[in-house]
Length: 275
Picture (cartoon, rainbow, N blue to C red):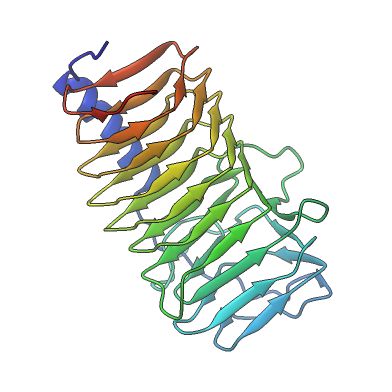
């Protein structure tokens, strides 16, 4: 059932990920932010507990300081304008607009009033904005629940972070979720679809991934290297590769079928009965 991962193919996929998400530094834009129901600091720096609601249009990067909580009310629409500059600003990570959280993000929508993170481009496409980056956060674990995250380079990027990501739709992002540097998020009951990679993890990440639907990814549903993901009760279908990696993986009771190739793994996988 398992095909030994060819070294050159493995390097190619890692290169794809690294090239796509290599950090670049960029500048803030000093215009007023057009919002309805929310006041955003002109410099994009959130240094005290804040709440967003209504419609929030962002034409700049946002940084939530350590030990600061940004709460987003149910039904809020957060719209990232296309990036108009390639200048640099050391505090940020990407060339496109990003929500960089070094504190705590509490984005809890509801089934009736999801929180939407999207592109403001007239013709939205994968990678229009950078994504939600949880970077060594301090002040408590973040929560994203009943959110819709779309058209980003990375829907949620966990860097030594352990958020709960529940009951959300991540679609048309280049990668849905990335976990690295020891991150161990709980990724539960989400739909992740229509990008390049559903979930990617490396550098001692140990995400718990359960009850998700991952489909229509052009490269792979799940990619991992030097990480120990736990994969339980997921449906991974209709991708180029279902699972793609060469390190230990614990998994059980998953439905991994209908991909161009379901498994592209080394024989180190620890799979249990009922997968």
